[in-house]
Amino acid sequence: MGNGQKVLIGSLAGLAVGTVLGILIAPDKGSKTRKKIMDKSGDYYSDIKSKFEEFADSLAEKFENSKNEADNLVEKGKAKYEDIKKEALNTKHAVS
Image 1 (tube, rainbow, N blue to C red):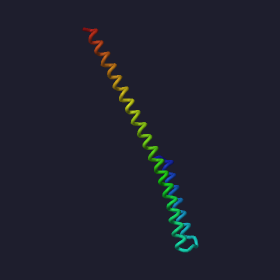
Image 2 (spheres, one colour; image 1 turned 180 degrees about the horizontal axis):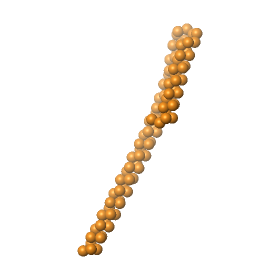
Image 3 (tube, rainbow, N blue to C red; image 1 turned 90 degrees about the horizontal axis):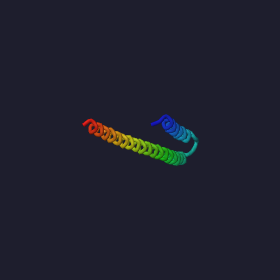
Image 4 (cartoon, rainbow, N blue to C red; image 1 turned 60 degrees about the horizontal axis):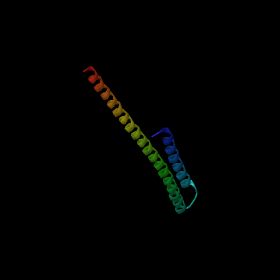
C-alpha cells in the first residue's frame, strides 16, 4: 500500500471519528444522534468501499501489466535461445 493510500485511509478514519464524536457531543435527543451516526457511517462506508474498489482495480491492473511484461521477457528469452542454438548448430556444421 502506497503512502498516498495510507494517508487517504487515515484521513477518512480521522474524519469518521471526528464526526461521530461531534455528533455525540452535540445537544440532540438520543434517537436523533443515533440516526445521524447511522447516516454518517453509511456515507463513510460507501466512501471507503469506493476507495477500496479503486485500489483493488489499480492493483489488478498493475498485476496484469507485470504478468504481460514477464510473458514478453519469456518470449524474448526463448527467441534468443533459439537464435543461439541455430548459431551453434551452424558453427558445428561449418567446422565438420
